Length: 611
Image (cartoon, rainbow, N blue to C red; front, side, top):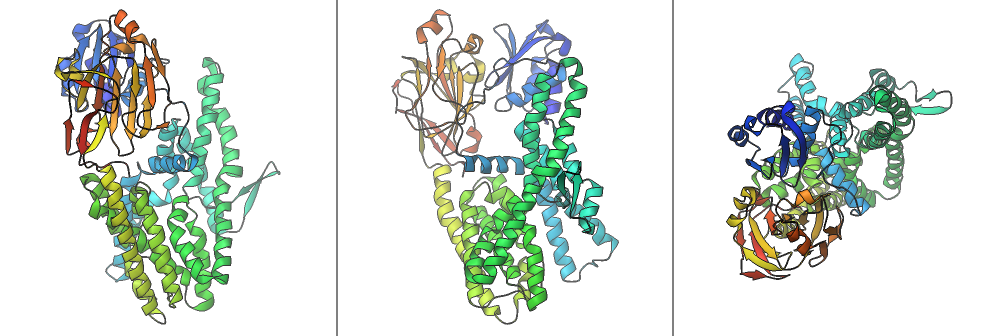
């Protein structure tokens, strides 16, 4: 069920927005204060797909959602018109991971939502190319024309897809983001770029606007939406409410459109120009190292949208020599990316991930590598490295042995015959090196990585000292019934929470009564301190880590005043729940009567993990 639909259903079943006095959320549940709780339809709430439990407790109507609670909360707030309900919302502050990992993670999160369209379009384009290549369909026919639209639209208008997912990632207005994507794709600008008669326009007779096509580009719109977050947010916060609705979008557009066209969007273009010039220089001076660099780094070129800069170089090389080594290098890289996806398909166990990998493999071998790149390589770093090494090494061997392409065609497994001629044996040897190297690296090192992340009896240690109590005795049915995942309850003997494994803080709540942890193996653990202690609003709690901060096993995470919490008549029991329980084949509880720091409380096996 979509978040928007779920939110509307929940509001209706708690008696409608007129029945809602206040709303907060904690780690797993929405907490409504209503005028008349007899209007709440608990059975119908629990019948909703995403709702685990609905109950009246502590004067609040509690609707248990689980991991999606904040998204549902935000949508409910939007639907019922509450402007500033901030209680119990996550606090995304603090030291973050290194810049490179942040960029890769952000790119992955932005590129993942458009994957269905990319995979579908990629397969259509690949199949259409094969049919046209072998004469099974007339490339001039209306059928080809329509099918080509179906396969090409999502690539041609890629900035629009990325605008939506980037706006979700950066938490800014989607429609403003789409508008700015429309600026990049405005027909008049695209027509000028296609005609090639004008290279730039002048804004106010001072600032140059590069006339280039941003179709299929990646970086420009992502960078633009990132800036939009701050510009739009600034005016939203600073302008009086009476003029906010009108002047925030006006002022934002007046700033963002010129800045985007003059500065941000052309950055990708200039990067591409410099890469193209550098590639041309190294091809002329040192073809074998050039082959390794060009074929190896092509996944990065595609990821950043600058791979198109090699196309004119390939065409020029063919026009001059009657063959193109760049085209041959492109084929090697394409085969490497598809093979890396194949390798991940062979070693992954998660059915959904295997499906994505298989689709990416199919379209990759047929020449469309975006599904493999965005869906697999970016997510699994081992496969990315394998594609770089395998593609680069195979291309180097092929160039050394005289391999070349005799037609500037789209790179795919169907393009292999265009390498027939002088150096064909070298090209085939290079292709074998590409496939074998990529597959070997992916399977050997990928399996080791996944064995770590797929968990072979990985241990989760106790984060607190105390006495283990039966989870089903907890005075909270959500935890007692383990609705959010396998859980262990510990009555603490002191007020300190320590890291139960190596990992990072995935969520730190403003009230500090709960913290979400993600292990380096992919385990998502919720440590919840006390029952209903969210009502203390952070009183008696002190955090020692921040969101997105990495930690080591045994690091102090949170301190809490145990005696003060008891004095306030709250149950201080610490509940540890593995919230992604369904991703693992088996989770065993190791439950002595008492636990100390370092004692095992969960033994987990057979999951997907992070890498």
